[in-house]
Length: 136
Image (cartoon, rainbow, N blue to C red; front, side, top):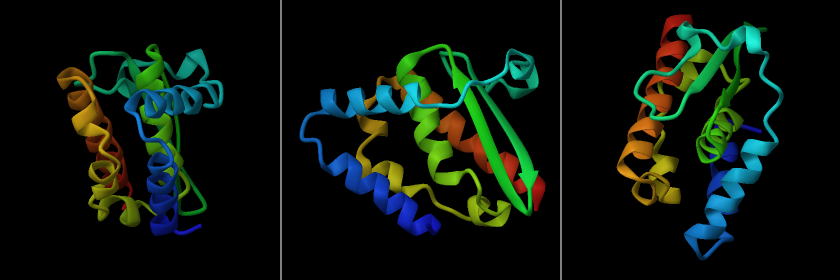
């Protein structure tokens, strides 16, 4: 699946729900499906600064693509990072770094989060972009 197809898939998934409570439930389910994140990777350098909750993001290069794993101590935040890495994990760094992340606006996520969570979302996006820029 291309990056554009992956983003469209998320937009389509979110459009199935009329109410934001249902979208939050969907995010929670995404977070529950995240692979187990080893305690050994829960280090300060993997902690995303600017998030109210604790969010760890790990990135490694595999065959020219960035592969992300993540975890959070808050269930909604875990769903948000799961959503982001679901779209961007396995992509070439230059593809991630040049993306505008406009699909986030399209699904209405940022404006339906509390100001602190919205700030955390932006911190997650910036960290993903930074990791991608550092790899290409």
